[in-house]
Length: 435
Image 1 (cartoon, rainbow, N blue to C red):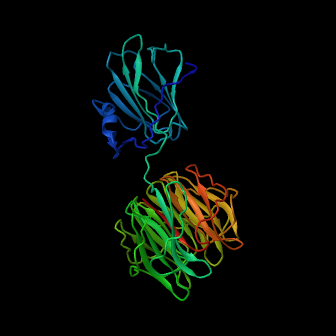
Image 2 (tube, one colour; image 1 turned 90 degrees about the horizontal axis):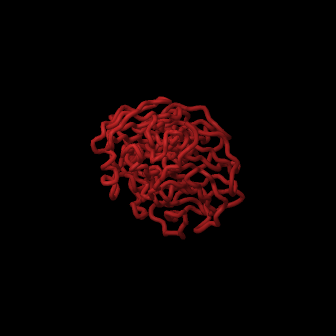
Image 3 (tube, rainbow, N blue to C red; image 1 turned 135 degrees about the vertical axis):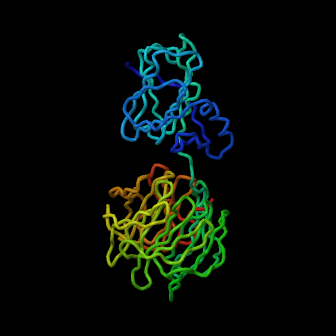
């Protein structure tokens, strides 16, 4: 077989796709019309175990989750078929864009073309349902949707809050779903700097801890899913500054590390209702001024910081909130940087004291990449958060002075040039997303 037939692909903008469970059954995500869209795909089909081989032979009446994480797969169709025979193939790991599937029609026609050409499907997240019509048309794809968007679990909006303008402040600045930073909103709660923030509950956020100029705090302030900051909540756990924070388990949060006057490695879990738990004995090197972000949809990573000097180790967080031991650092050791998730399942560490402007991407398995030459103003003591469901924004900080500039990050992890600051220039704020 040679050549490629370009099959008709209908890109849907909904960002919602059918997902396969571990038992091979079709699980539908919430979303208008999703059950109807995949009813034909699921009905009457016997789903098989996940296929990981480089070749396989398909049988009519079956559905096959095809995992091409490690290799492409060539699929041989039955040598004979009857009208109405149906087969379904689904991109199990969303990797067909990297390692495609090729269908060998095994002597029968495919979309009316004789078995002299290769039929290749190369789009991440694709599901292909084929039905045998007759000897003229042969196998016909009746559903070959190309879904280019990963099912999104991120938040649409973000918020920068608190910090130091020359004096401590509690002001906030909301970030729209298109990455536009709003003007100052009068602060609620104790003015402070060097605090941490993360999402919880799937659509809300929480600020934690910080330094008032005279004492460390464990005070928290909840942020509603409309971006309204609540009054101070009496803190739980060790009062500290310079902690990091991130989401885990899709709807919970974790604060970890920081300084009480000396570096600590304690952590505090945040429930999906925003309740902060008591201290968990720390794992990994005690340090301050670290950064953290989510990766892999439901896990987290803390990275870099200051353990007496600038460091580059990282610590993974499981989807149950368990912090792992140190992983040897990748990239330039630094502290007072920021981190956030992007692309729905990846993360990025950026900037830091020096000041510097390099970044380090984190893949969906939590592996930190080497330095990427920075874009935008070199600075430390900044913050970052997600916006627009799958993009990110770095903002504020201190370079040659206090700044309010921001840098948008695309859903492919590309950092854009400076956007002129809106709101009070400051350093040492916190930031997180909300919906």
